[in-house]
Image (cartoon, rainbow, N blue to C red; front, side):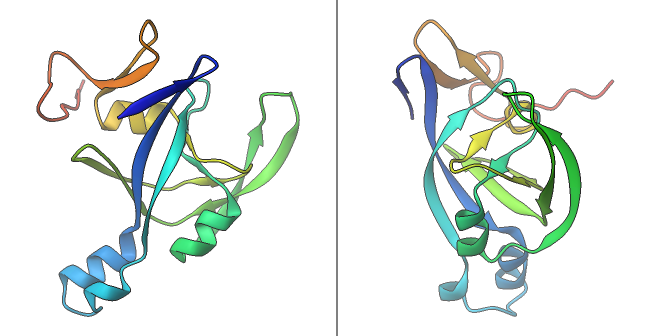
Length: 142
């Protein structure tokens, strides 16, 4: 469920190392070794990608697969690390994404919102499922 603080939309999400998840599913990793965490995340419609702080990346044991240039809200440009696959879950809706490594809090960008078919309810400052698809996400294919 999303909460608000000073106009920001925040919500609780579950993050899971997607490689661990696959290894558990194949019986190659004990379920107790699955690396996962629940975090309070900021919904950032100005960001395209999922952004994770380095501490979360380390906690989940995510592999750094490369770097890419990023422009920050304050205009700074820098190369940032890109993680391997991470599963993002919000109220039963799940997707797998790479993430950028930056800052000190989790940011949910547009790609995750689109893939989970979620909308930002600005009036009530919360994240909601698309009213057209309240029970499950629908992806548009053009």
